[in-house]
Image (cartoon, rainbow, N blue to C red):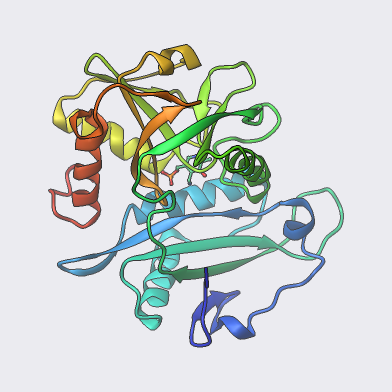
Length: 295
Ligand code: PMP
């Protein structure tokens, strides 16, 4: 996967520069300790041109992640949106994945960063987990304990846990992992939130041990609009094994159905599920094809 070409322009530390000429120091705290924060955002081609979906929510989360980790960061939501739209325009992208990353400066001490730099880059990226139904494996890794880290921050270092879980699942022949929390309740995927359906009701793990996804919030909103009951709580793997269907959702993954968990198949055909309906609404919503009241 080529994330940039010779002609890609990115934003780094106040400048729009070719990706091929951008450098960063080898002594950055972010590189050594995973002490940095990032976002994963999508823009979609709409009738009015490229639109960044949920731009405010993503940029506010970037600011909040910095705050939680004590990383100095001075960009406003408006500035972040302006830079991102400019990056799309310069690189002639419309359906794109936008990746802001806040990097801390050289510092080998284990204390808050004193300064940071912002990178914003974008590339064309299809649905992160594809569009086929997923075969999941319950991971032997659990999500980090919320008293060890700020789980609502999208911090670079948290993704070591995700890489371990996805790699373990792939090596065992599955498409993706499903992580439990450290007490054995359902948590989330390495890069997506979980929903499951039982007797016409949707369920999703409550916040606390998960990254509270922006797509998750959108799905909950779509349910409200469509009159689909949706509950948040602490659920067990057994609740999932006896469910009718399930799906993952996230900015990168969008909404993608799950075929099986640890080789146990869901009985309901995907096209009959609530998840399938939600996927259609979501894909229409991101392209501005349904009223913004839902967005
Ligand atoms: N959980 C994790 C661990 C993630 O990395 C992501 C992707 N950002 C999500 C959930 C989904 O979040 P969002 O809908 O905000 O992209």
